[in-house]
Length: 161
Image 1 (cartoon, rainbow, N blue to C red):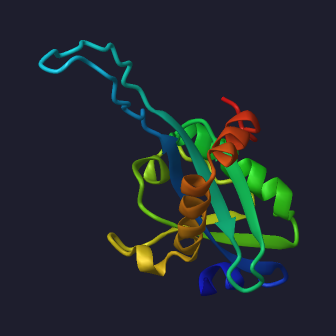
Image 2 (cartoon, one colour):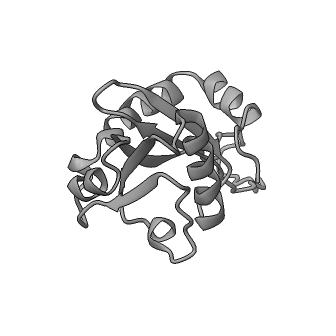
């Protein structure tokens, strides 16, 4: 952080955390009635539906920026970075350092850092250092408590690729 402050001494420098969380539904298997001793064949379509909730968190102020993503890969991560940079006003006069884990799509050479955004990878196997990790407990509670929330998220994707 000191390097960025020295390089951009006249700019505001903020530290943010970033993480993704998979939300999804697995198929629910139901029981059927059958005569004693008979085994029924019931076709089941096993499939999963996933969405990814991603959050940028500013630990000092508690401010956050949320995105709902259809998948996670380098292309979508680049779009999320651009959207985040635009929403928090990164650029001339403001620099943002984003702390993130070492997921493959975060560490790819194809990742494009928007002007004013500096990505900082965490050490391997250190989720306890990630401020955004504390948010996921809340989303799991909401998801398991009310299926309507999941359906609402599915209808209102912010980035559709």
